[in-house]
Length: 200
Image (cartoon, rainbow, N blue to C red):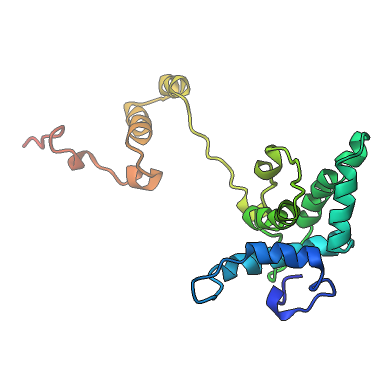
């Protein structure tokens, strides 16, 4: 996936009435009739293509099924499409970009918005939980190990165990100044003229 842009591919469902209804509502035009949100349209079409690769049900049929499901007394049937959206999220985690890496979480979120927008603009908004949009698993490259930041109590304990005034001074400077360890290691007492007087 991802080797050709949405506008370079002709899909079998491109003339589907539900799809065209959605795209028409998404389009924003200036007074001269020129589309002014082309990037949004391109991203939405790409996300919808991924959805179609996953769901394999024609757009109009999806809307017809949704219309039936919302009237059902069976919770499983009534929430059928919300469940499919959860499955689609997991499907998006398996996709790779042109570099062969998993898509970033913001890209995944964009893919998920396409089918949600499709249903909404066709009159059948999906009842997705708020966490659906915020609980998106980050790609491996987005996971940054959090640096350990000691608390005041931990600093006091380390300070008590320091074996020399030099070590205690280094600890306090590192903790209070925000300087990097390399900068602190390069400091000399001469760098503090208000504290140091070179006696003859």
